[in-house]
Length: 243
Image 1 (tube, rainbow, N blue to C red):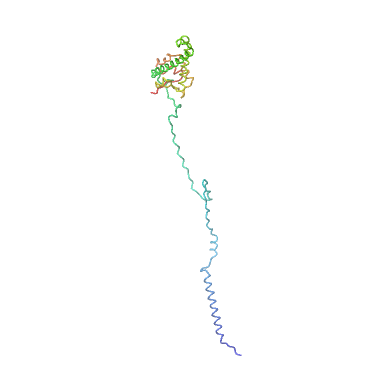
Image 2 (cartoon, rainbow, N blue to C red):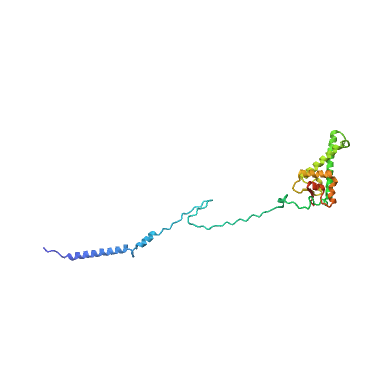
């Protein structure tokens, strides 16, 4: 029996054609999946060893509380500017009683110059004292039923004592409260203590005793050219004028 070899060449050509297509497909796939250059191992290590950039967490500020500084961050130092000292204002009224006017002698502020004013104030004050004494005697006479003249004649010692009492209270009250008697107010005079703003009662009593006991002898320093009276030097007080 004879074999039919008519299909031999056709089958071999078909196999060869299929093999070429498979080979061409394999090369084409290799070109598509293979990078153009080889990947070096050192590039892969550098890429993996490079640190990733870190993002600092956002800080939320709270009122009245400073944000903590992150470690390693340096902030500029702020030098505080010293505040200017406030100006000091001094009023002349704040120095009352601290500054005393210098004088050459104790009580030497022109007693001779103020002698006329002081005499006029003395007369006014004693008129007021006599009026007060007369009112007291009138009330006493009305209470006892005796005339005022008989009260003065029969009890002159008591009348003199009443006069001295009213006289002392008069000067003690006005000198201690306002440093001026009513007569001194009319003549713009004031009694001043050399060491204090107010006059102690002891100085007022010393001045009153010198005025009553020495009387006209208080004028003796004026005869020797002194500018004060004895009662001024004894009591440590002086007379001043507003004019």
